[in-house]
Amino acid sequence: MKRISLLVFMCWLVVGCRANEDSVRQFIEQAHNQALVQIAPLQEQYVFVADEFVMASNRIPFVRPRPELKTVGQERDMACWQPDMTRARSALEGVPLAQLRMKGVIGDKRVLWAIIARPDGKLEKVRDGHYLGLNFGKVRQVSPSSVEIEEVLPDGMGCWLKRLTTLPLASAGSAV
Image (cartoon, rainbow, N blue to C red; front, top):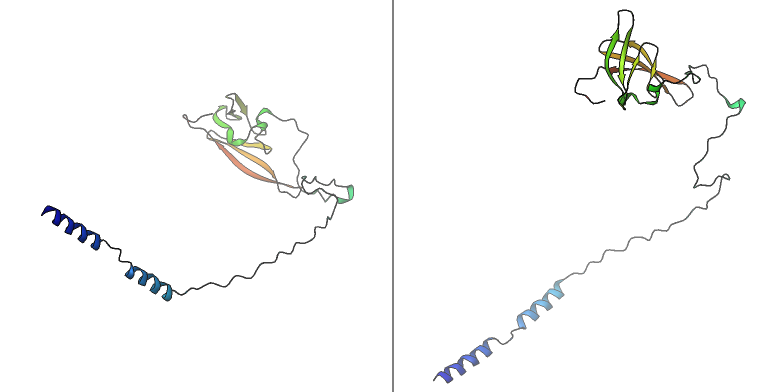
């Protein structure tokens, strides 16, 4: 009996597992028939037209240009103010103002000297008329809380512009 029931079960299993691909094939055919293929038209092909290179001068394009030397006739009227380029430079004129710190003042009622710390830790003293900073900075006034400096900046046209800058007294915890 067991053999017969096993044989019946196996036959039922084989018949039940028979591949039923009819519905799948119908679905694929139906999907292919209903699908609309839309192909976008190709864009118009871009035509690149290269311009011919015409060398305007004998300068090599991969080398930085050198400034042209001015002749005597090309020099413009220098009626504007110019800084004294022949003046001897002080040690503080090689240091940007942002790296200088005012540490204090010494002096009496007539003349106050500001103590300026350089980035290397050395101290310098300056008073009215002394120079410091990279932009021809001239000390205009020393007060107990700050140093007023008149800087001179080029305007790009051969003249120079003056601007006032204040170097405040550094707080006790600030670095040099």
